[in-house]
Length: 355
Image 1: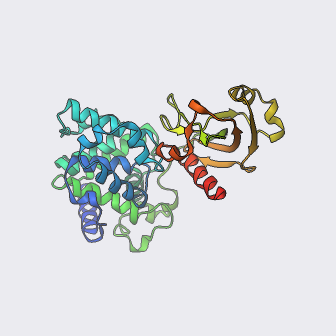
Image 2 (image 1 turned 90 degrees about the horizontal axis):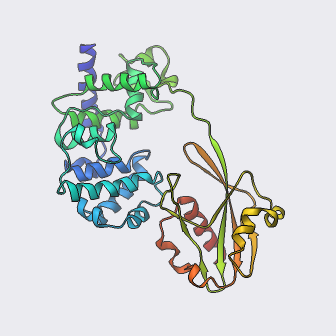
Image 3 (image 1 turned 90 degrees about the vertical axis):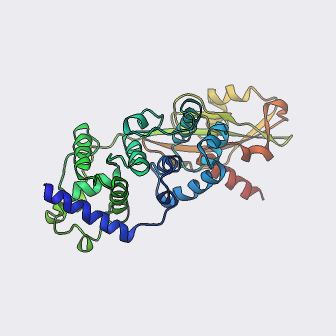
């Protein structure tokens, strides 16, 4: 193993230095920018995350600028990227670093782990890229590369697998240039050792790759059975009043889209037929708020919005009502609110149809 370990690290770094992409966060060791990029790129492809990184750096060039912003402003800038808890944690951590740590990022892996929203992977990335701490990163790309090259069939989402892969990753890291090594293995997994149909004949590891030798590239890495997908049925009541106002409400609690805004939501156990609406108690309770109104279904076919462990079957109901007065917000101001992409897509489509 030691010989294979040394060969692996040197070969990987050599490949990276010749093939790496020129990305803005690779041209700095400033922990703020590296932290920002790592949070943005969690569960996100580089092509999607890069424009957000540019926007955030332009709007918040320092961690203090980010800390001084309102949470609503951060959520609005994050809109469309998904997994909004990342944005809330980003803002909370910026405030903590500014107010409690004097604007200075922790320099060790253990201290970085104490930051809200920072797990082992992110702490390892910041520690190695900013402070040259030999802490190995392990993400989806790393799991894929290591499981294939070393022929590991332990499930990557089991506690045994998580420990096994972390131990191997730590043994492989080049201690003299840990930041370069970590970027190299992530880049190799993202661009070459891809999930489907990698070009194994052109791979730098084709002579030592166990998955290639045993014809197991398509089955590695192994993942335990996925969690069952939950179906939910959302009915959004889109108020359109005679005084050109609508209603938005902020989501509370620990569920999806916490602190984002949405139209009044009535959740049902199945799809509601238009003929059933006037007999459905949640709708009757909702409509008591208005003196006069009429309701029509905007989309007969539900919009299916897929999240990691749940699918939302969504219908939008247009409720034309008498003046809302102090209850509503002007339609002209709706774009000022941070909303889930599901709502943003509806708003764009609705206004396009009206115009």
